[in-house]
Length: 112
Image (tube, rainbow, N blue to C red; front, side, top):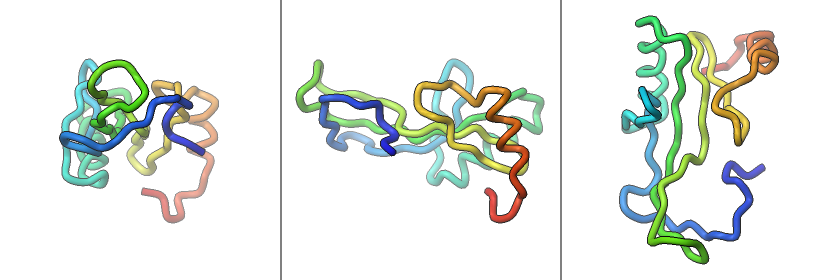
């Protein structure tokens, strides 16, 4: 399963490459050195009253076969809960209510 929507563009790492972080207001990425640190930051947002929290992996890349000099796009988005983290399917901003119910029904063994 590809995390990038099907495209005829070829992305080649450039600039800052792959970055991770917590997604803040207006979709701004609060960069962290690791995905684990991003999850901690997102969980702190939940404790501080935010209704939902997300982390993301983004890529800065040169584009071959596309328009423009380069791009920055999201490779993967995760919805963060106090006791688990779920990969959000491509094309969705977050999990649907039905998907959240399924995520919460999983036993907590080995979940982040």
